[in-house]
Amino acid sequence: MSDESQTQPEATLKKTVLHALHVESGAKMVPFGGWDMPVQYSNGIISEVKAVRNSAGIFDVSHMGRLEFEGSGAESFLGSILSANMPILKVGRSKYSFICNASGGIIDDAMVYKVADEKFLLVINAGNADVDMEWINPLVAGRDDFTMTITTAETAMIAIQGPNAVEIVDQLTSSEASKIRRFRTGSASVNGIPAILARTGYTGEDGFEIIVAADKGAVLWNTLKEAGATEAGLGARDVLRLEAGLPLHGNDLSEETNPFEAGFGRFASSIAPDSIAADALNQIAKTPLQRTLVGFKMTGRGIPRTGLNILSDDASATSDANSIGTVTSGTHSPTVDGGIGMGYVEQKYSAIDTQIVIDVRGRLVEAEIVEMPFYKRG
Amino acid sequence: MYPDDLKYSKEHEWVRMNGNIAEVGVTVFAQESLGDVVFVDLPDVGSDIEQFAKFGEIESVKAVSDLFSPVGGKIVEVNSEATDNPESVNAEPYGVGWLIKVDLSDTEQLDGLMDAASYEATLE
Image (tube, rainbow over all chains, first blue to last red):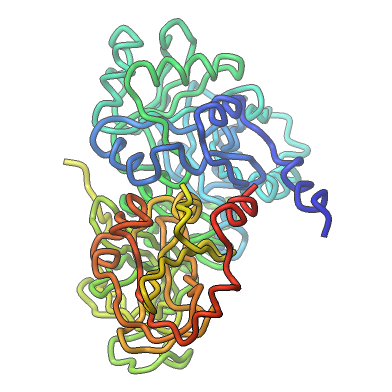
């Protein structure tokens, strides 16, 4: 095999405006959702997780898809593609929501922000951006009561998360940032840079996701770093979101799962009647669940990983016949100090405190279903 | 980074000979590629291992890797420090972070391993 064939896919990877800064900082870069992203910096994932839990960390989330919808029809359009109850969303607020297909399967999960009257921002997963656009574009075609603009390339997005995050941003915004309450959004000048601030995140910590013009991304990154925030990569982000009990699309959510079995029925129970997924989701809401996404903690020695079989605790041997479910996410948690995971299990095994067994490549390791999140900030 | 008194395998394990006993661990390159080591699974003392066969698993936060023994023989000791404190593999891969000790079935098998310079050359 020639070297060329190995390097070719990397050549087509997209780069955020912060890419050069990551490389300069000694980050280990990996392909993620079509982007060349930092998985960790030189101090490693555990130290980055601790920085976010104890102080503040910054993440380049510029790879996430950003779509602006503006116009009189924007709200009803978003109501037709999202599981969220859009009419109750007020200016300056945000909602976690699902883009579901006609069977109620989850195409993507997304945050929708109402930034102004008749103006919305939708943030979608980088790895799903193409699939999402294939779904959304035909639905937008023919609508003249709003415009949709993809702003991913023309903006940069940086998340700052941790117990010190709000104070750091507050000092850079003449105390404007702390006026924005949890899950709300507003605009402010961050050290002279015009920015949209959303007090949301994916770590279980307080903090902001900050959107600025693409050419201001590097300045903002360095400003936050100088103000005391630690660079953190995708590796830390995955651990932090799992500790916080937050699902990852592609792992814990997919077109083969629906919001109710994922435990997020409350984000899909007030869906607009004309939404594409309304009939399916309303039906699912009335039907007893076959399986549920649960969180579990390892009680024996081992780390759960995506794809491993979950067995009932009376299982004495590795066998598909004993399988009661599958691990969808798993890692070693530095905060809990042990193996934690999420997975779908048959409904009758889903109660808290149920003893289960994880088939770790042939080794049967005991685990226990626990309440999520695994970590809650104090 | 790669002490001269050790022998190395292409799977990034090292061997330190002491009489007929081979001490085995992973190299600096391996621990740096893995990142934070959070779990080490080692075999039972007394079991037999073939040269270049899998003898355990090492896990970082993100990934699982197999451990391959650079030598074959009987496992006479496993390092509980590595299993109890996996970060010792990152901190001192040639010291307290060693993994197993093997009583060699034959010493000719060492000829199939690399010296420090040859090993380092494979990393470039």
